[in-house]
Image 1 (cartoon, rainbow, N blue to C red):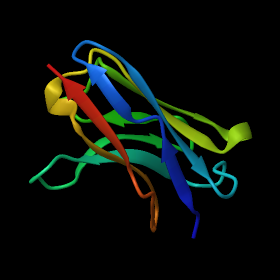
Image 2: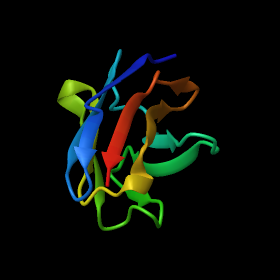
Image 3: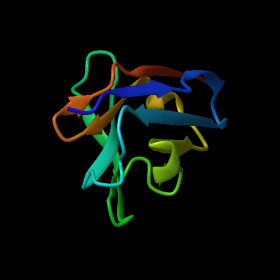
Length: 111
């Protein structure tokens, strides 16, 4: 199974932006779908966004219009551009591929 490694998390003020990266250990061009999930303290892990092999994207209602998922097959990397961040976006963000999870990167949004 593919290994995934996230980066790009950190502390940001409300209204700010961050870009998360997820580097895969192998080519992502044949993976039918990848995405991002997040888990806030005391809450269940939830879907944030997915991107299909054909480039079709999907977003949770809570992040639509603020987050953008993209992929770069040449770099085996999936990105999550997060704009207009809110305190409620604070969570550990996990990269996902079928049968694979990254270890997560912490995003903290201060008010």
